[in-house]
Amino acid sequence: PGYRALFYGPPGTGKTLCATLLGKYAGLEVFRIDLSMIVSKYIGETEKNLAKVFDAAERKNWILFFDEADALFGKRTNVQDSHDRYANQEVSYLLQRVEEYEGLVLLATNLRSNLDDAFTRRFQSIVHFPMPRQEERIQLWRQSIPAAASLDTDVDLGSIAMQYELSGGAIVNAIQYACLQTIKEGSNRLSKKSLVEAIRREYHKEGKTV
Image 1 (cartoon, rainbow, N blue to C red):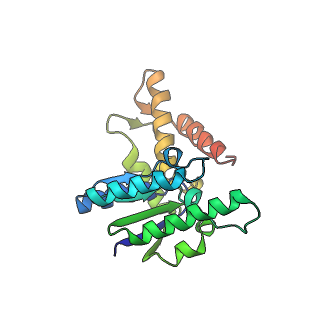
Image 2: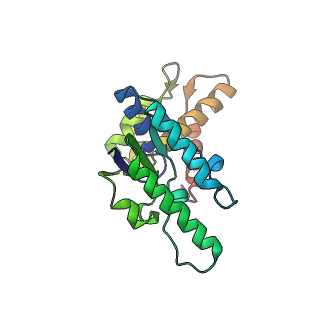
Image 3: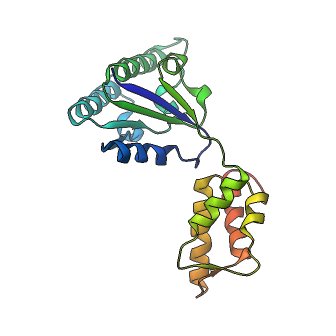
């Protein structure tokens, strides 16, 4: 019963967006699992919280979306103390409920290798979301510029796309920051300076330098 798919790839490459589009395509609600509301330090509470989610999902025919899934579906460890034993029980319980769920379950992670092998064997689909290539980055830059904004004559989006390797999410963030800086200056023309500064901020988030 059901269908299980894993989305993996770097942040900002469209995993969450794809989950929402699948919900739109199928006409079903997508329920994103909020890990902060699920995982508990108290023994047995995580399983109870998960049971409530799965029971509600079965009644309402939700698409279940586990973002940053390795936090819940991580590799089981060798049992060295009681904490390890209960952590492994949580993973085993998750495995059981995911297998029994008759709807669509989507898991998203940045690193596929972080997931327990017992989970990866049970996916019907494993989809890689790579970083966009140069031609895709050009398209992302062009489509993300707001209609109310224009570009200075010194801005060459093709050159920017070729020079800076960014994910789709990072490109959107960069444009939003550059637009805010432009509005602050009382203009609607995006300058090369503001875009490069915005790109530098995105690189800094990832621990890289321009």
